[in-house]
Length: 202
Image (cartoon, rainbow, N blue to C red; front, side, top):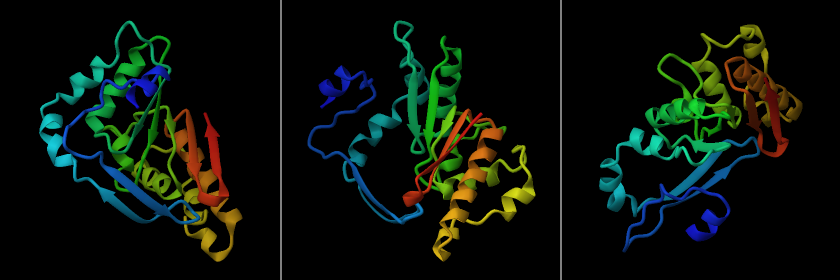
C-alpha cells in the first residue's frame, strides 16, 4: 500500500508501523446537512504507538518533511493535528517558493478551531468545513471577520433545512463561506450534505 501511495506522489515518511496490532479505524454517519449523527472508533492499536509518537518532536518532524530538494504544491491537514504542528506547517509553507497551498479539514466542531493561531489568524489557505464547523469558526473569529453581524445573525441556522427550507440552508452556507474568506482564507468550501458544497474565493 505504501509503495503504491509513494508511486502516486504521496509522502509516506510519517507513517508509523507497529507489529502485532491493527490500524485504527473510524466510521461516521452524517445526516443530510452533513452533521455527525453517530460515530464508532476502533483505536485499539493507539496505545502501542503512543509512546513512539510522544517521543517525536512534532515541530522538528514537521519541518523535516520540507526537504529543499522537493517542492510541495498542496498539503492537506485535518483537525486531528494539534495547533502547534499546524503552525509549523503553515510557517514552512509560507517560506517555500513557489508558496505551498495548505488545506485544512476541520473534522469536527470540537477540533475546528485548531486552525486558529493564538492571535486569531487562520493557519491555512483553503478551508473545507461543514455548516456546523463553519459556524464554530465564524463565532471564534467574530472579532476579526469583516462581515455584517446582522447578516450572520439573520441568516438561517444549520437546522434550516429541517423545516424543508433547503434554500435557506444553502444561503446560510454561503454567508459562512464569505465570512471565512473575509477572515483570511483564500478559498472556503462549505459542505452541506445533499445540498452539495458552497464555494467562496478571495
